[in-house]
Length: 277
Length: 148
Image 1 (cartoon, each protein chain N blue to C red):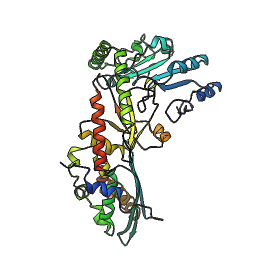
Image 2 (cartoon, each protein chain N blue to C red):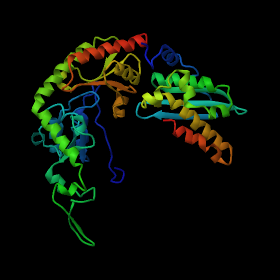
Image 3 (tube, rainbow over the protein chains, first blue to last red):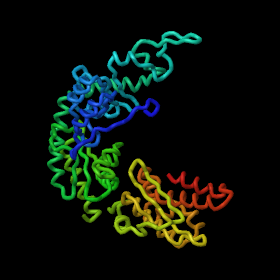
Image 4 (tube, helix red, strand yellow):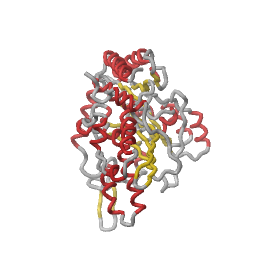
């Protein structure tokens, strides 16, 4: 960014973690925006971004869009044709696939204007002493020996979850999240972050329990058989906005049940017992 | 069965941590943090005649981090630098019965040893400034980097 002289600006969020899209309008009005990048679903709060609205606004201003779909793609139906964004990324390890492999989808007419970022086999068409030409898309961007086994594994994961059905997965998570939000909000000393409307959020619930550090909460509930994530979730800027050092995050997928939610709540009682809360 | 980490001793030690605060114009002030989990502490020391005459700490961290920092400050306060230089991680951990973290919890061991790392690095900076041949204290820096 420094090299290109680019400047990074942020669109803020309200207290529920929803993007303040008025700020996007102000940025777009300056005529200086080149790229708008955002997550379709927050990995911390589960907030589902109004993706269509942002893309439409950007398109009207001739601004390119990059979407992080690592959280949305495994949990809901995403139609790239309909979205009509320019860049879209998602990762296998968040959708039952292998680690270290993912997808960066780029609109073809945008890709055609881009130079390779990586050299190696397959990405060249002709090599001469002083001149090289690039291969066609997508080979131009797929240098060297690919991670073949991981890509095949990723394909199997995609087949598996699409067989279950993205709507089935989404509905299952809506049910679980609704149940969990209802039950968890009754726990004494709990603070739950994010929007309350389950239709506007995915299957993750970030929370804090009294003033017990999330790492301590996570370690204790882990021993009760419940795995949750704790920490800043690689979202330090959002932690700052929420005025917390870290949060606990329970996340659901197709294999989770309401009994798991009950078990989580029961394990929080263990935390309360140890800390005499 | 009682919890292997969250014993009453540890939780009490963290809740009522010792030597919390700041020292004005300290001889050593060392900040360190575990970026992945957010433990973030500053250790400050006053040195008189090669002795750690006062030590205070402040910051934010989990129960393990706070309890271990509290214990560490009590162990080195009033001791000479040589004692602090040679302090081993096992000595801190055993004070709180946390030796099992070394093998069983590579993640939480960082919380437990952050203050020892800060102590070693702080002493290194202090001693390296005082003597011309800093290589004689290089082992401290090495010690600190090998803690976890």
